[in-house]
Amino acid sequence: MSHPKKSKPKTHLMITSLIGIAVVGILIVLLKGLYLNPSTVKSTLIGKPAMDFEVELLEGSTWLPSVQNNKIKLSDLKGRPVILNFWASWCVSCREEAMHMEAFWKRYREKGFIVLGIAIQDSPEAAREFAKLHGKTYPIAIDDSGKTSIDYGVYGVPETFLINEKGVIIHKEAGPVTVQLLEEISSTYLTSQSGP
Image 1: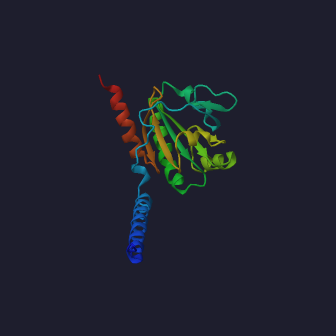
Image 2 (image 1 turned 120 degrees about the vertical axis):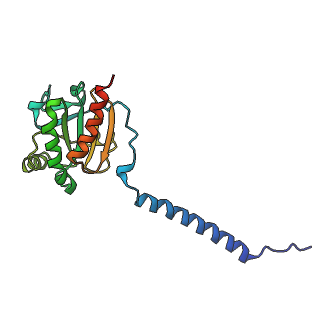
Image 3 (image 1 turned 90 degrees about the vertical axis):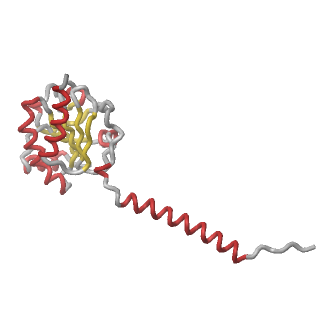
């Protein structure tokens, strides 16, 4: 007694359809990721204690409470709000941002803010030259090992974090910042400090 054979065209059509659906699904995921704006993705670090780090200070030691052997730790700055900016001398957006960061620093350093710029994937010489060229007077350091930028989930420059005086990250901005944006971020912080 012979059994009817399944038709090959039906099986082939079903397999082709499944492959087609899988390919379309993968393309949708890839396209979504391609057009996703990283500056709108909320960091998982918000509301958490900022990880301590030690980096080599290149310039601006006079503004910092304790610098030993040209090294600065984030924990040395506890008790003061910190604008932590990751940048690089080869970064075009960082050139545009430099004057804004400096202007903010000059306006807010007397209010207790520390601006700390950390150069990543860079050389100390290039970072110093960039700082001189763009008139940076706030403290700048270099992340030689890359550990600090990895710990903070930095995937591109510039990226900026606001860390409050208790050492908690309260804001992250991916991409270049302006004075106005920094003032908005800091005014929210200052307003929360003046509350009951």
